[in-house]
Each structure stands twice: as C-alpha cells, then as structure tokens.
Image (cartoon, rainbow, N blue to C red; front, side, top):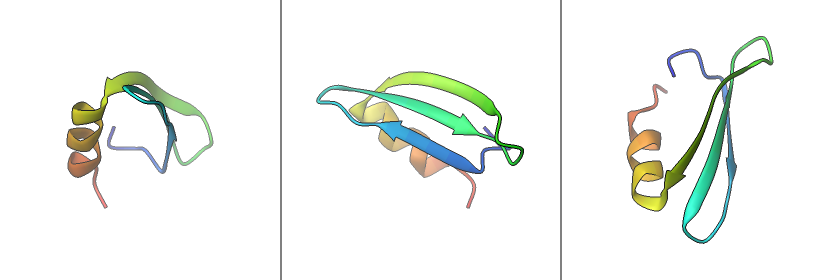
Length: 47
C-alpha cells in the first residue's frame, strides 16, 4: 500500500470495501475490512 495516492472507501454498517488507486490512476488493491481493521489500515497509511 505504499504507492496509494487515492483511497476510496465504500461505507456500510459492518464491512467496508477499500480500493487503493496509484498515481497513474490504476487500482493497486481492493479489500473488504471490518470497522476495527479499517481504523488500523488508515492509521498505518503514509502521509
């Protein structure tokens, strides 16, 4: 996730879908995560 320039988050009640976009506009990852895991992922993203 080091090359993510845009993080898209599809919000839901219990599970969130994340889509990371790189600097060229191409998807670099897609994940389904829980509310707790979302918080951990966002805290660990580089500025």
